[in-house]
Length: 172
Image (cartoon, rainbow, N blue to C red; front, side, top):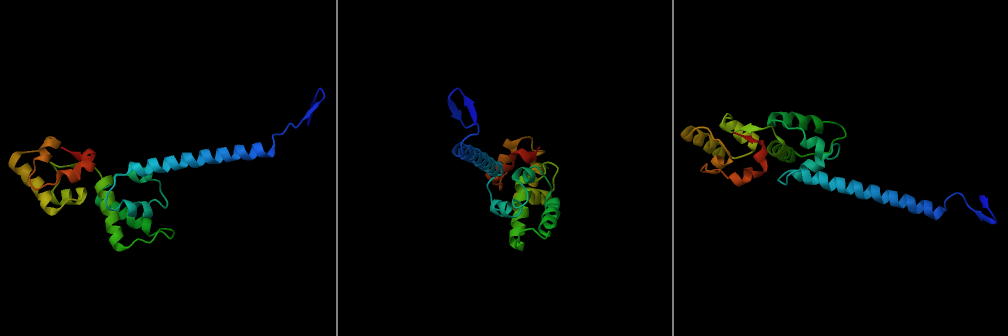
């Protein structure tokens, strides 16, 4: 207590003020972390396998770590199998493992040059059908190298809309 003139005041803050301050700090942390989690979830494209990825990879890794690791299908298979073999890893069915690898390959894979990749590589790395991959190769053979996205849009038999989320990975 301090004494100023004839008044006596408590130098320490009241217990209520301390509790309110702690609650404000806690609320700020919760809101900040919640906003971060929402932002992280929004960084990943929606698609078949996102829920499996969040459940399997999200247990140990934030989405930034996962999404920053561009890999080929083969590399994703090795990585996923290595991670899921750990003792603390969630149980993932073989079907979900395939869905997970397909998602990671399609949305978080290495760049793919549509003029250099074989039909098998296009199918594997872009997760497109055999017929769509063949259509790209056939268009290349018939018309020469594709030069831009507009050329890809002209490929008969290719659902180019399904490739829109991959646009930044597709090179010419």
